[in-house]
Amino acid sequence: MSESAAPGIDTAFPLSPEMRAAIIAHARREAPRECCGIIAGRDGAPVRVYPTTNIAEGNRFYEIDPKELADLEFRELPNENAEIVAIYHSHPASPAYPSRTDVELAFWPEAVYLICSLEDPDKPYIRGFTIRDGQIAEVTLPA
Amino acid sequence: MASESTVQVLIPTPLRRFTDGESRVEVSGATVGDALDALEARFPGIDERVRDDSGQIRRFVNLFVNGQNVRDRDGIATPLSPGDELGIIPAMAGGSAA
Image (cartoon, rainbow over all chains, first blue to last red; front, side):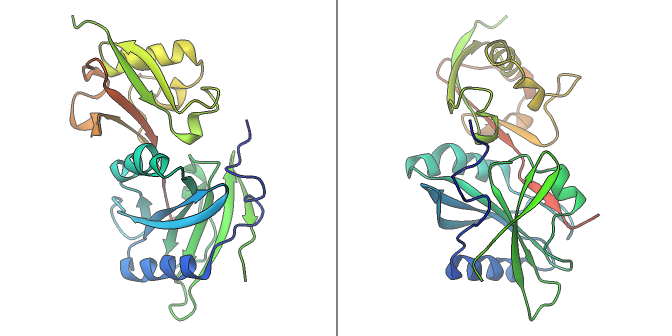
């Protein structure tokens, strides 16, 4: 069985301008805390952003509320014939690159990990990665 | 001693490689721990992702019985009733520290 959610999504992730804007808006709302959420997809194509609650303490960690995640993974998304294709979180004051913590806690290797940096508040940006067996690989996002 | 109950285990995407892609598996057990034992017997290797060497639920895994987190109940000793759903959810977590 492939580790990938969908063919091709590992190397290029078609993040739409609307999804990009939604993630940046969420990151700005949560700052200085980290925001987090998932993107649901169908047939390999991302279809909807789901902001979730960050239950971690402090401003430098995130953990998606496991109850919200369970409801999405086991109820809401299967009912819509969708699945989790990406996980996003923000780095409010650092670059958009997976931290050691991000790599250690990457328990969903099939998903693309999107990171939104607010390091320069006027120039937020998002990069995408796969994190598998401790290895980080960049995923191309639309310009 | 509680009697065994047949329950549905909901398997998250990252653990479906242990279950031949199945998202829902039926097992029997009187408690969450029993159900995990039965799951491991059928799909060797999966329990190592759920429990640590001391048999406790891993810090970055949550288990839900009918939507209720077993950490808020009796952990792996939480009793199961026929038809219960036991959901396994690995954390989505990380951070910008370090």
